[in-house]
Image 1 (cartoon, rainbow, N blue to C red):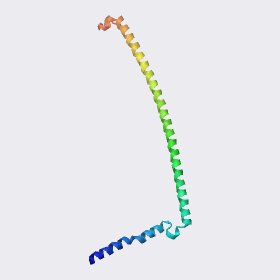
Image 2 (image 1 turned 180 degrees about the vertical axis):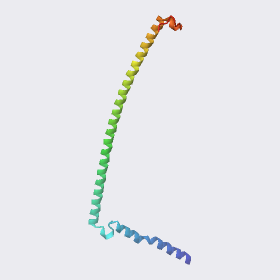
Image 3 (image 1 turned 135 degrees about the vertical axis):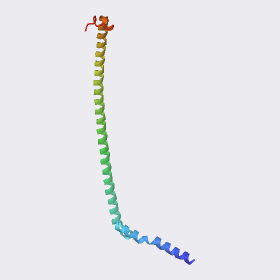
Image 4 (image 1 turned 120 degrees about the vertical axis):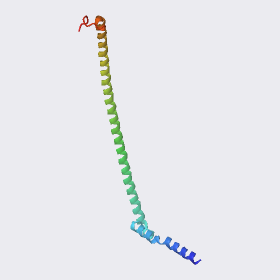
Length: 130
């Protein structure tokens, strides 16, 4: 039983020991405690809370504005890129059209030449004009 009592006293002492440390840390933070928490302390706390809320609101408004500016810049960049891609596609399509026209003209001229010179198709070097 004596052992149990010693253990209980030790546990109680261990639990109660940090209380002065906690009271000291509250005083160090500048927070009002007990009798000091009068009307002045409450008014100061309310003013501090309002100031912090306003600072946070200003920060949020600035962030929203920054987000909107970035969104507009991104949309402008996307539109510029889309216009550039359309110009390049139109240039490419025109080059392909011109190439196809040249190829068709060549094939038509080649077919006309081969029909006018059957000796060349037979690989007759004497009768084939060069």
